Each structure stands twice: as structure tokens, then as C-alpha cells.
Image 1 (spheres, protein in one colour):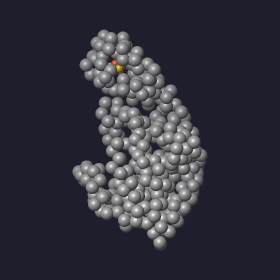
Image 2: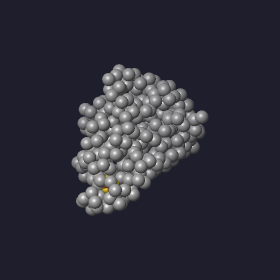
Image 3: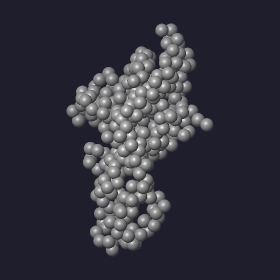
Image 4: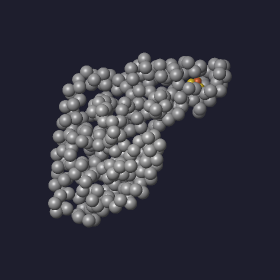
Length: 328
Ligand code: SF4
């Protein structure tokens, strides 16, 4: 029994790493059995902060579709599509922009932060599109009358704004949309191999769907307890990146590893080997599915086309209601 309808999207901004997978995609794979899900590769959103060089966007969309499908998102159960292939997103975005006070957009806490952050990196994003990012996000969600949106803590202000815009539309014209609710995802946070936040810009990532040998090589490079110099020194798993990964990929042995580490009963080399083999097994399906999909690009494109077709049908019905409510 479906609990309701979900909309969620991701920007196609380059290759995934394992942290991205555990951060969002793994949650989606679980949600697909409980909700009626619309998952969109939101390419127009990618343009709000990276509009100058669009040369890679098409490849990134394709890579993202491969990643999603190899994670186990089922195109039969879910509507999987590319945002720009459903033009109704743009129409609803435009109409919502007519009713949204500018101050609502300007007060989103992440807006000024990001403006500064990206400005410091030399990006000129003082644009109408960037300011209107939450507006477009609102259109994405309510176009499908989604009642639930899986979000991380940092996206709650965006969703709050989406709810406000939705309320304003419903009050001004007539109730067309449900107010979307946040479903806070409790995803595991994976550090990079050097213990900092996993990020491609730090070069500390573990690639998503990496071949087994690459996984093993990345695990070998992981930082451990820096105080543990010799195998006979007792270690402290609480400060060890390898141990953090054990807690996610080798739950059954976590207690043993902890005890052995603290009593110098296991060396770091062996501890890493154990972790690597557990990760190879845990991620084997993803790796195999990605290889199969890579060999069949036509299939991937067909899935996206069929998803867009299904999304358009739902979007067209909503837009009929919207135009009628607004007398246009
Ligand atoms: S034994 Fe394992 S948990 Fe302990 S410091 Fe070495 S790698 Fe980390």
C-alpha cells in the first residue's frame, strides 16, 4: 500500500561518489517500495549555479541515470525522468513566480550563504534564476501533487518556502495542491578516506560503483588511529575512518573489531582487508548492474523517455487545473 506520493530530484553535476549514494540514493531505493515516487534529474536546477559551461550536462544526465538504475531504482515502480523533458515545470515555475513576494526568496538562509560561497570561488550567480531556485523546486514538487519530500536538514527552509508558496496559490485561487511535508532522511554520513567530509574537491572520495580492486585500493589508503604506530599498540576505533566504515558495511563484526582494536588484537592491515572484502560484497550488485547498463545505453535512454512520457501525463492534468483556477 502506497503511503503517498514523493517527488525528489538531484542535479546532474558530475560523477557520484559513495557518500552521495548513502546520503540519498539508498534512501530512495527503500522509499520506492512504500510510496508512489517521481524521481527527476533536475538539469534546469544545475543551470542555476553553473550556466556558463554546459558542455558536460548531457553526459552528466546520462551518468546520473546509470547511477540511479544501478543503485536499484526500478523504472517500473517509479517515474524516472529528466526535468527539462517535461516543459510543464517551466510553466508552473513562471506562474508561481507571479505570486511569490521577492522577500520570501531573499530570506532563504542558504541563498545569501551560497551567493557568498560561490562568489568567492569566482562564480557570478547574482542572477534571477539562482534567486528563483526554491521557486522552481516548488513547481517540481507540486506539479505532481507530491505530499512528501525526502529532505536533509539543510533543505528544510526550502521546503518551508515551498509550503508557503503552495498555500498562497491555494488561497488566492482555489485549493489545487496538497502542502508537501518533509520526510527527514536519516542517511549515514560517510567520511572520505582521509577522515574529512567525502568530497571530490578533496580527492578523498570512493567512487560510486567502483570495481572491486579500486575499492580495495581506496580502503588501503584510509587513515586510521594516528596514535597507533605499531601493531602491538592499542588503538582507538572512535577516531578511525576504517572503523566508521565497518559500522556501515560490516555491522555484524563491529563489536569484535572494536574490542580487538582496543586490545591490539588485530592489525590495521587486516582490519582494512576485512572492511574491503565486506564492501566488495555489499556493493557487488551495484557494480554488476552498472556494467550491464553501460553496455546498453539505448535501454537507459528508453527508460528516461518512457519516464518523461509518464511524468508529462500527470503534469498536463495538473496544469489544466492550474490554468482553470487562474482563469487563463
Ligand atoms: S585496528 Fe581497525 S579500527 Fe583499529 S585503528 Fe586499525 S584500522 Fe582502525
